[in-house]
Image 1: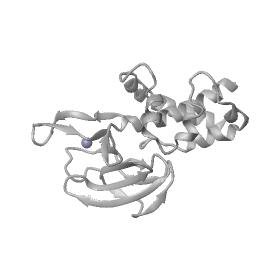
Image 2: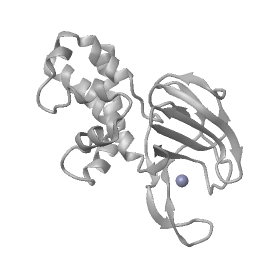
Image 3: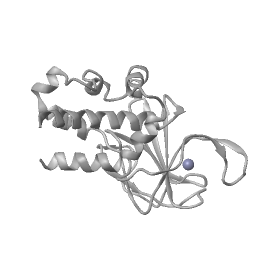
Image 4: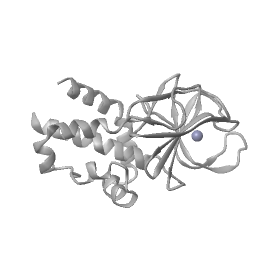
Length: 212
Ligand SMILES: [Zn+2]
């Protein structure tokens, strides 16, 4: 019951995300995503990927749904986008520039690892401020402008493990979390990964709703 309540709370918090994803297209993007991008937890999610029916093997093992739910995490408790991925006017130079990540509102918040992985880089530079880069299979996720880093280089991280505290370090006009994602070394829209997380959680949620 407790997990159900948590799931409900998370869904309420993340409703904006759904709204945003719906602007991408009416079909859930994750069908496409999982096939094309071989996400680390691909097997766990895609085999049972259905918005209307529950996978048979999962049905027999309800624990797997909980495991699936817990295998992914949003990077912050509350995701409010300040600036999306894509072309924009650079706040410092005024010129058009590709924003290689998403900026989320933040105020001294814990930042979580989104999946199992390894933090490969922990450092500081003038542009990113304090940053951390976590590898999840073919994906690398970077969090920038942090005030504090809570883990050390080359250590394993678990989904939902706090890895840093948001801040305003480096080239930043105010506190926020800059989240960027690379797939095989190339920047991609972090929404692809966030959508994968949303889908994994939503499937567990649907399973328990159907059980009621
Ligand atoms: Zn940014």
